[in-house]
Image 1 (cartoon, rainbow, N blue to C red):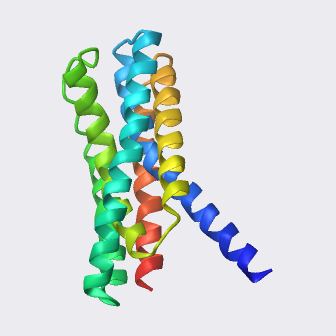
Image 2 (cartoon, one colour):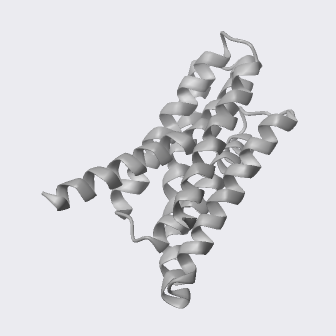
Amino acid sequence: MAWTGVLTGQLLTLLIMALALGMDAFSLGIGIGMRGIRLRDVLKLSTMIGLFHIIMPLAGIVAGQYVSTLLGGVATTVAGGLLLLLGGHMVYSSLRGDAVLSINHRTAWGMLLFALSVSIDSFSVGISLGVFAANVLLTVLLFGLFGGAMSILGLLLGRRVSSSLGEYGEACGGVILLTFGLLFLF
C-alpha cells in the first residue's frame, strides 16, 4: 500500500513538472500563433518541440545520474538550486516582457531554434530528476507529450487571443519550478 502511494506521488510530481515545462512551449506558441501560422506548421513545430522535450530531459537525466554518483548528498541541494534558478529565470523573463526574436518559424532552422529554446529547461529539470532516480521512460514520455500538446494549444490559441496571456503562462511555469526547487532544498 505504501509503494502505491510513492508511485502515485511520483506520477503526480512528474505530471505537474511536465505541465510547468509545457507552459514555456505554450507561451512561445501563443507568441508565434499571433503572428499567423498554418495548421501544417503547427503540427511540424509541435512535433519538433515534443521530440526535444524527450531528448533534452533524457540527456539531463543521464548527466544527473552521473552527478549523483559523484556528489552524493550535495546533489539534492544542487538539484534544488537548479530548479530555483530555472524557475526564477522564467518568472523574471515573463515580468521583463522581452519580445520573441523575429525568426522565421517555417524554416527548419527556425523550428529547431524554437524547439531548442523551449526545451533547454527540460535539460536542467532532467539533471535534477536524474539525481533523484526518477522513472526515465515515464518522465521523458510525459515531458514530450505535454511539451507537444501545450505548444499545439498555445499556437492555436495564439491565433485567437491577445499577447498578454503568453506572459502569464511562462510566469506560472516558473512559479511551479520555484516551488519544486524549494521543496527539494527543505
